[in-house]
Length: 90
Image 1: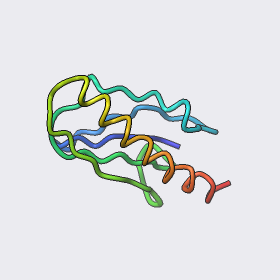
Image 2: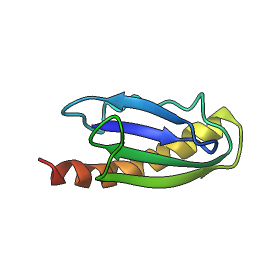
Image 3: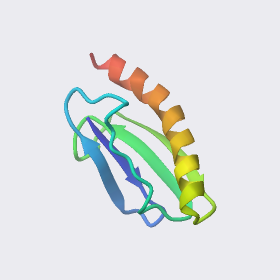
Image 4: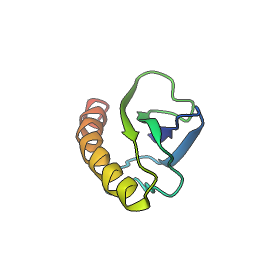
């Protein structure tokens, strides 16, 4: 399982990859996020070949506090999706 963020410029950051990963150990941070539309995705391998699951989110402010709060809410929503994704492959 690999969890990545695709940034507005198309670059990909892998935040955590592991077997038996759970929503408490994803290792996310906000220091390298910029304003724009991002995609949070979970993949079964490092190449992110199908099947994958993803959700988009936008950052409109460059304030670190705003990014952290918004990203935390995105992660909470995405965690519900990822739990279903992980359950499908168990």
